[in-house]
Image 1 (cartoon, rainbow, N blue to C red):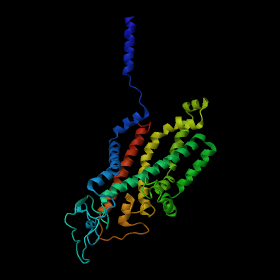
Image 2 (cartoon, one colour; image 1 turned 120 degrees about the vertical axis):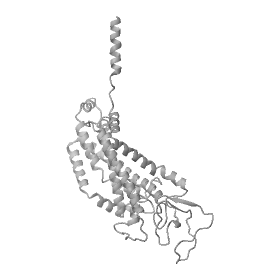
Image 3 (cartoon, rainbow, N blue to C red; image 1 turned 90 degrees about the vertical axis):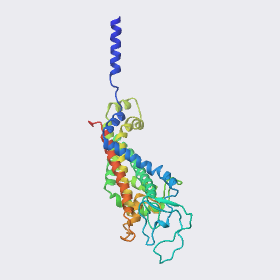
Image 4 (tube, one colour; image 1 turned 60 degrees about the vertical axis):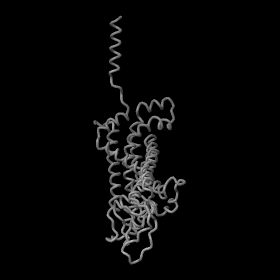
Amino acid sequence: MPVASHTGVAAYAETLDEPRPRGQWALAWRRLRRDRLALGSGTLLAAVVFAVGPGAPLYAKLIGHGPNDPFPYAVNVGLKPAGPFTVTWDTPVAAETDEYATKLNPPPKGTPKTLLLLGADSSLGRDEFLRILYGGRVTLEVAGGAALLAIAIGMLLGSLAGYFGGLVDAVISRFTDLVMAFPLLLFVVMLGSVFGDKLTFWTLHGLLNAGVLKLILIIGAFTWFYPARIVRTQIVSLRGREFVEAAQMIGARDSRILRTHLLPHLAPPLVAYGTLLVATNIMIEVGVTFLGAGIKLPTASWGSLLAQSWGSITNPLPYNPTTFQPWLTISPSLAIFITVFALNQFGEGLREATDPRSVR
């Protein structure tokens, strides 16, 4: 009897020492932690999102002015905006100055001053750094919203094509090929020009800035084909598995099988692709705005900040050395580069981490 009890205790101790099976997301997190570049990019991306999200109004409250407040003393009489780290008088109106004067007369005594971290944005003298923060919010709203819409459409069409097959698969696949054949940027510009006036001021009761919903709908409607193909491929590989056949044998409806048994398997690849799609949509927003069919001033976006310096393809602004300020091009371009680079590296790391064939 004592021998049997010792044997049982030893067997129980061995079961405690055995490693517990890890879930899919736990394994993905374990692989992702080993990828220092992806982890660093994710941290950088979180910092960017915080800066353009809650950070923008916090900084505006700290310095005491908004992104659209003009500062005439941040622009010289030749209309050249001030450079980085400029301290200027915090007043929207300049004192009367002779038209032949070489500089503006100072404001009344006691006028407070404020800091323009990256200088002024144009001849209006607005805070360039603050407009980059608020512009980043608009750009990420467009990019993220369009990515969510594209993934939703792709999940719906890809699931139907992969699960039902046959005629449904053939029709959806040919429709996907047709949409992929469209020149995306040209089509987005055309739709933005034709329907832009009707959709620009749809703001969901002030939740979004003017023009954001328009770009979300147009970009999302023509970038869903890759998510659809990813979903279709996954569904085709899963629909013959034992757990799907068991659900069919007990009489589960097709909608329940798709929702409960198949769609959870699609989350990892779609999350990984979603980050890459957001990066692509940022570049699309910049390109569409530069082509004159995107976000319109005075609303700031990273695309409109560049268009403000160089104009659009239909209304270019010629180079003027007396008013040109290189920071107005470098600053938004650097913000775009950092965000797109972080999204691409994080998305690639996430894709490898969620790939069950990964050996890392």
